[in-house]
View 1 (tube, helix red, strand yellow):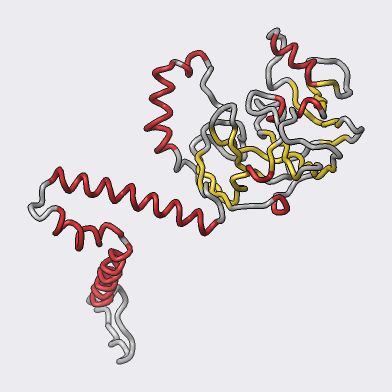
View 2: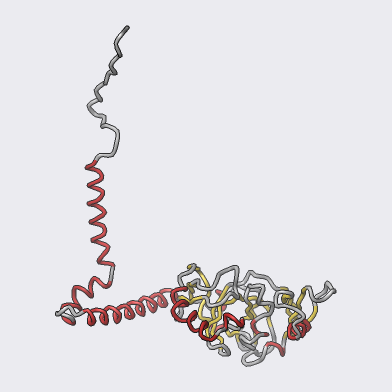
Length: 292
């Protein structure tokens, strides 16, 4: 019987390192990471509060005073950041929170929309020229919306008022029809699409900002105006035929157009303010929450 053969080990070449992680490399990485974190603290505005404000305002390190100082500076920093962002983006309202589902599935309740200032020429939409003034003129006086839907057997478009009558009688739902065309008093017609920009304007009727898509840009005698609509299937009509507003939106009243969506970030505000209010009012149960 022959004895077991011993394995032989060859020495590594002088320039070759053994396999495995060098503990010195890991230690150096930790040191670099620690140094980087120390530098990051100078980007935190509360670092300067701790260094320069607290020693003067709260030398005794009272917890209540510290809490009040931090809350004050938190609001101050948020205000400064918001207004600085507004100056950078050219709008007094650089960010708005989506509070309804009227634009689903483009964005959803709780999303934050980042806006950029935009003049009438920077807002993209289908254009029409109307030889009449529109300031303070209800849209129904110079246009008629034409709808299609399941409530009528006819394949042709019918006035949307016909569907509204069925809706009032509960013989149709808001998802059973949708506006497809606008016909104007001068004979022009416009087929609707979703290629226009999303803008924000303030609704005087609801006293809150509305985030909807521009479906028509109207060049009138007294300036440029926009017709708007939500993308959701539950928004079958243009805004100017609903409780949101009666009038075309003047270009001067547009707060900005959407350039970026940040999902879910706005739920912090909704959970603190909107949800408790709606729970108390019971609108989740009766389906009458004020979501345009």
